[in-house]
Length: 207
Image 1: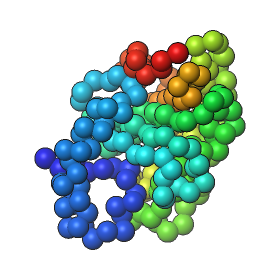
Image 2: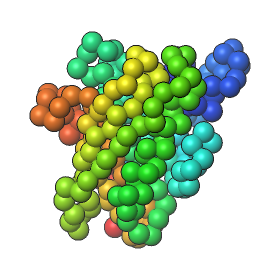
Image 3: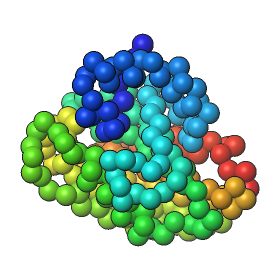
Image 4: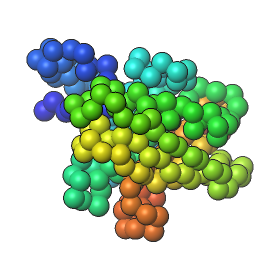
């Protein structure tokens, strides 16, 4: 069965039938790549999408690597506690830890371009994002934040999500793993128990 790629903007300019054919013909390859490129371990009910870096629709992101998206089963249901709940994981080629300011710039740019175009509005505010460090240790950096952005997928309204994030640098392999967990629900709500159960795979870092 063909799966709709929710975040793949590079197909948005194609005719629907052509896009569908391309997606169907690449399902086997995509499924294989996703299995090989998984960054986090998560329940199988959370759908998966892989997006390579650099991203053609977000040209200010200059990272090399890829992104793994994991969507909660009801992430598109505005009346469900899982609405807009997802995990964004980045594997980035780098020899040094990525500064928090750099992560903030790239995530903000990602969402700025992600909502263009949409069928709700031609003019809407740019995202507002603020991240701050929670803990820095030998095993990595933990951070949190909040982002307000225009929801061009489901509601056509401005929404706010909470963010819990982490970064782990693997010096031997020259890679950093950055995980963003997003939900509109306040920290401490049940959905965060599900989000916090999603973690970096044990074999992701070879250090």
